[in-house]
Image (cartoon, rainbow, N blue to C red; front, side):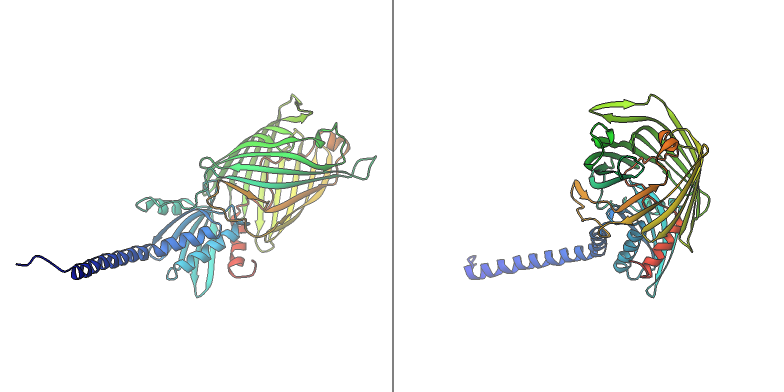
Length: 421
């Protein structure tokens, strides 16, 4: 029996075997890719849109999802973008249940129905049932585009104009206040925000013309449930205060929140490189009622109790929301003194930040510019620090961290109906 085979036939046989193996690997790889295409495409489209901390679970005709969206300006816009992306990825699905969180803690729940290119949405605070569905998936769903430990550097401008000075038209201060913020664990936010003078006509011996450590603090959100929300912050606050801040809120309805704001602070300021303090502990306690009326987009906020420096009084804010714009007026009555003024918050730049999901340090500009004018800033009201409400976080305004269910539902529905962008 002849065991010899020609080189040509051997080479041809080897090519056939290799080709068969290669073809089978391609088929296997394609089948595997096809099995992951829908899921991977969904994650990619969401993260490309600027959505982070994404978790998904499908069950029958319902898609469950949780995410955060610090890159997208406006909570209702991020929810709308997520719903539109999920509807494209799951064209045969008509029910969506979403959780929008902040600092790793769910804040608001959305239930949406999509049929014949029409959306119907509702917002509420019961996040537990959706979290339970996401946790029920085996294995535990992977979190995509995680943001834990990433540092957000935001360049805030601060403009101060005081026209109550007798020897000049106005005392002007323009400052740059970059904030360095990161989330290290669930519900946590670590914040450092120095204040750097850019231009002032304030005398050099005045602390307001010098570098200050504006905010250096640790915030912890303890609870965000169907009825309760609670958080604490410890550190330096804006302006020239140090101590402990605590808030607790109760969702009486979808339109009305009742809350309590507590503080224990002392005056602390940097002067010529040294720290000075007033050596007094100031206890503040304000009861707050916050109501949002969706038909008129009016927010009415009433606070009564003990202001930051101990004076007793009330403050009434009436704010008109125009999507992301907010324009309001306020009045204060405290220890026999009256004051009033107005405030506003306007969006800046584009609707989303640069998408750097894999960068450890992310450079940003503020999503909003907010400013408040006070009618009185002299005599007893100013000298005794009356009616003071400080900022314990850099971007606090009537447009940020506002989780009122009726407000989010109202503007989310308008966004999905293409009435606002």
